Image 1 (cartoon, helix red, strand yellow):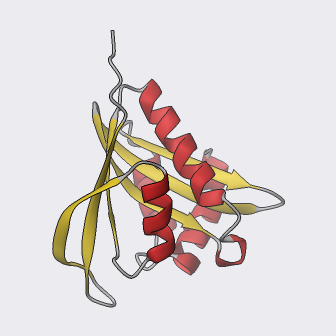
Image 2: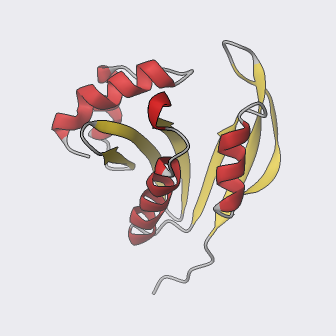
Length: 143
């Protein structure tokens, strides 16, 4: 992701996410050295993913794909790219939260090796919903 992508990321985040990103929030994370963004583009930006890193661990901040582009493997590509880039930075364990009602995302995460680890009660707002916590460990040794 480049600085020029910030407005498009904020736009996608506000139209497709239940926790909208603003340009200010994207910029705040963009300039942090512990945050990684990746974007998917075809003719225009189709999605983005963000990760907060504290090696050897990380937390997925968000994965958002334009509604009209969902179901085409873009989320898989984004998450794979994000985790590959994180691995290069010494991250081998990734955590995330997902709504129990978000069946497509849960299937994606399970397919990519994430395992359910617990529940966070009333984690989400608008609407209020629990979060399923998940983790993926790559079991890689760094020398």
